[in-house]
Length: 208
Image 1 (tube, rainbow, N blue to C red):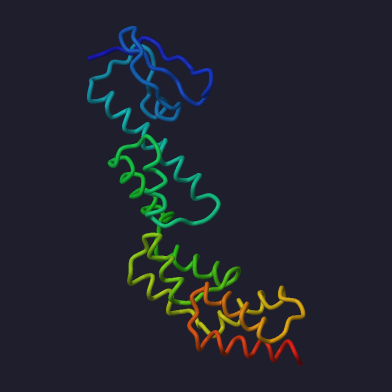
Image 2 (cartoon, rainbow, N blue to C red; image 1 turned 30 degrees about the vertical axis):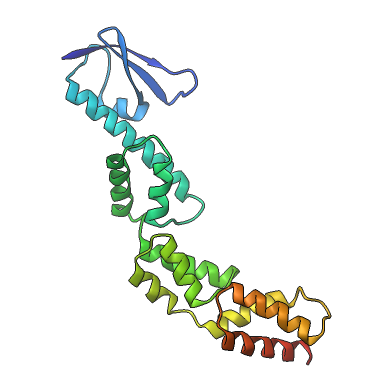
């Protein structure tokens, strides 16, 4: 057994303290862990308890980072995993964090896939094929990615994307209009027939 002889606050990180056991610095913990464990001078700890405190502190640290990463927008499980791997945490802590986030509903790849589809549809339309590829690259299950992508209508998406591009082209002739708009839609994954139809519709609308 080892005895806590002092708990000293850190100057740079006021939410953390240094724990001294038997007069020697032993570990750094967050105030949350200290409060939950009821730590104070004279409390005795076994080595296994010290190890458990370290693990709990690591978990809360990883969780805080993950929550910050999630704050701008939803993320896939793989995205969060990759972000946490850039930190100091081991795989056990990362998996514990992901399981916790999944349990409280903050990690859900099916919901993430729907969010990604709706965001792309609203702000940057692309083809079913390209959306599915993006979702798979983000680690979304192949079947989920396929099912969500199939909800898109490529004709609608190409026309919406083409409308935005057409507004930027100015007064150009048809060959220029066709070439630039077709290239733009190709980069968004649309197939030839869909592109051809959309370009024709947009040119007709432009010249009414």
